Length: 188
Image (cartoon, rainbow, N blue to C red):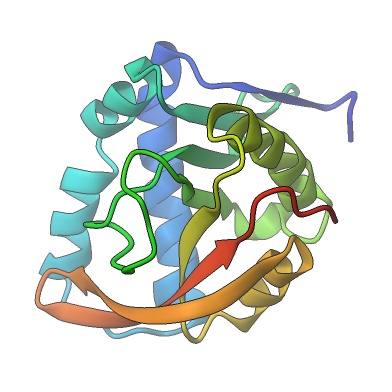
């Protein structure tokens, strides 16, 4: 795996590929695997605003955030990505969350054809130390779809526990998410 793939921080020249990868992984997970029957306008609108090249550019340039990618060296394609940085109450609505103080995993996706090959583990082993360094002695938060049991098991392995629930708006559609939290200085 190490010889064929590069694990690195994203660059501005990745923004178009990141936007396409985000759309691909989102549709793979929620439309194809979980068969959510979103009205077509809802995911399209969401992806235009929250997965656009401009959105990724903003995250890459933000010094308080980090965007990682896994690139297949044989063809230059991105196969996974993650975005981490400060937590925000508007993204993760929980009373115990301290906005801009606590850390958060904002996005974490691996292409379906590359899942179960250790890429998620590799990303998590990069993200968690980065978040612990930039948000020392603070909890780390994330949202996960309530019916995505595989992702919940993955996060639980890394010390995250369910601490709440929230609605995630996808246009007019509302997804039911779980809020998960990892206490500081948790070791796996």
